[in-house]
Figure 1 (cartoon, rainbow over the protein chains, first blue to last red):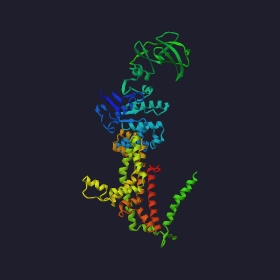
Figure 2: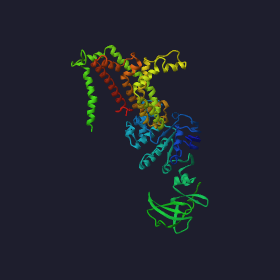
Figure 3: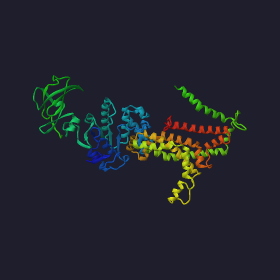
Figure 4: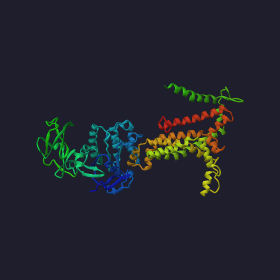
Length: 322
Length: 274
């Protein structure tokens, strides 16, 4: 099976600071793969190297098997949806979307009909002659996507495309993007620091940290079998417990608290808080620091200061690398 | 609050302008001053070949100077906008320093450079590039260099202030969408910096029509511009009405250019002159 995109041992540093420390990635055609990580982990640099806006210090980028490491960005069949959308402010929506077609020397009527199709696809039929400055954030977002997929690139790179939108619009756009990707069959490489977004949308997630991929896997694998303590914390908001020389990740909802009992570990209730339909109980433990248990419901009989024993069901604890 | 501004504008801008226009329709007196007789003669006079050719010459020099200033100033302003903040400040400083000295004195500096066996000739001969002194002073090229020297900073500042505001991710977007460096420059960068470039053109073209002292000092009597003509008519020939008519025509030409600029760029303020 040929990979549509392959990164081989990519390294990159800026002014003596290592940003990428040798990353490898293989992407299947039509895949939706998310690079997940907090800011500064190197995910944007990875994207810029794939698009050609940046050249790696070493390693190679293969597109459909061909080495494009040093190919100019305009000669790669890859487009980017930029974080700030980067719509051309001096062109109307139609001209923005038709830009790449015009560069390819396509005839005007043909461009017009392609652009019209795109406007329908992103549900902006009425907005062709508007200027980008006259659009809302969500509309600009859709224009940016339409502009990047109009000439059917092999791979679409999306750099936190929903970052500037409010929560409700984000949810809607997540669904819309996923639908669009299925329909167009274009490979998506998607950047986000939002683990929920990554889990919702991706076929596979590559968790990045310190310029390396810490784990690459399906959302289920990443969520249920995190490889490291960092991923368990970052993706699953799990508690990391050091017990008997082992590092265990247990998600907060799997923790059972029993008053005045021993359990696997024990501690003192520190505080209770209610957020997002969940009650969160913070417990100071002697051996593992502060841990958080959560459950559905508004309140629990436990009070701050209570001694509790903490247990969990078999299989709820996953051993991870520290 | 606006009243003082109105009064100031009327007294110092509108007043002289109206006076100039009125003057341009009057007759020259036999001895000194003007008589209150209405006439178009002054304007018809401009159509005389000798005066008309002065306008054409001025236009030609202004166009040559402006084109050269664009070729030097645009890249300068463009790359200046890409410097780090520290180097931007330093470059800006270097560009400002000459303005602390009278432009007349700086022009005399060019005389020292350009005159026969001056600095330029000595350098060229020492390097073995020329055998004989070039004697650049009092030639057309000397005037062009003087124009460029005097007006280049305005172009640089205008382009710089436009390029400074430029969102460079737009160029990346263009490249990403398939534009070569050249196409990205033409379709994005140039369009985005057009207001600066146009105001730079206005700021260099308009003054270069009138900077008579550059032509006088570096060109001797060989290059006569509209500015020099006005000055001569006013100070030497004492023909005030004709000088006024020449000035009105020059004002109209420049006003038309500024109106054109506004129309093309859609910008109401000239960029680069804060």
